[in-house]
Length: 129
Image (tube, rainbow, N blue to C red):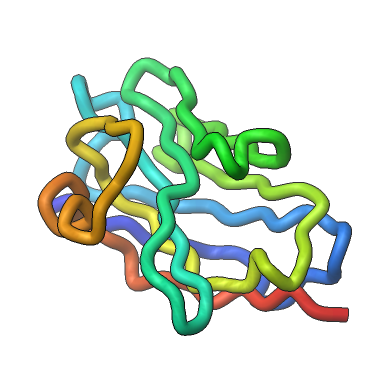
């Protein structure tokens, strides 16, 4: 069974870069046709797709976050990472990594249950001075 685990700092100052890593066990991030994704949930709001990196290394980003988001991977460690630059308090959220089985232009609430699996437990990141 594939398991994902997020790691990274829980507090980031405004204007700095948020960096998180997702460590994958029980499966390879180069597995054909899977996308390895980041999702977040701000306080009192719904889930928001941040972006993903494909099995072939191609990256995909939410249009609203694309300008300050970067997703990369280290296949030797079976990890993929998220970097969100120039963060503001609005980037405060629980951040999840998960396996994504298909890409869409827009994700409804139900898509997060049908298209995503093997969610990590999530990590709370607060942006505050």
